[in-house]
Length: 288
Image (cartoon, rainbow, N blue to C red; front, side, top):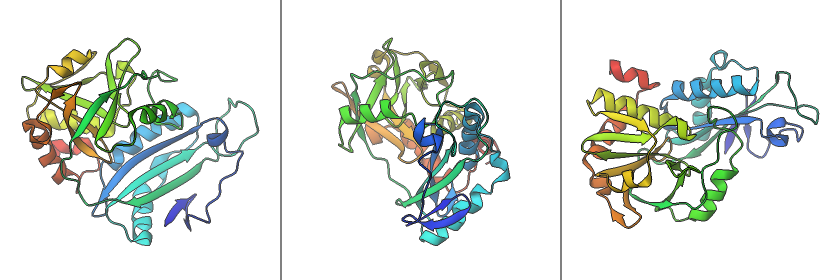
């Protein structure tokens, strides 16, 4: 398998990064995961916008608009012979002296990884499992998709490796937060609900797309602070992320849900299937 490292396509065995990279020493790194569908990087612009926010917060001096990320993905896809794939764009702060740094990082490492995925995954159900471990709070006011990932890893260890289960975080106050690697939605009386960013959850790219899509379809939505009882009393529920797409929930805390038979989940996914082939941003929904 080949990867992109600092503008050069290399075999994965050839890639090297300095042990003095502050992404390794201090977690000063960010990443985005996305999918290509028939070569198209779905919602690429939205991913890059979130990544740029993180870079600015980390004081990593890099303007993503000056990079041809789309071209990099196309070149790597051609080299690896993959049109339907998982893509991870990783940017770390780069090499520096040992010690905490206050000045900007001017020479970040830019890494693009790829692996094969099937073209489109049909709706697959999961059980939502309430975690004992609580969601930690973000380091800053907004949660970044950064190298600081142990809360998620510890949660995954608690939930286990069963692909049919997704751990569900609560905040320390007991509000619903998010899945181990996903956001969560549920529907009650035709209205779509999801936890507010005030809970400290990641503002998922698919989360934002689903809320925008719901608006175009006339489905009312609300983001707020909710206790687990709100989910338990709902009509249907699902997780979302950029790799697994829309994942209906069939069971939570002994309660059975419609799962992939859920009317709203099916409606949203039918649009997702079409949009995944063409959209670069959720904002294009208003023009499609």
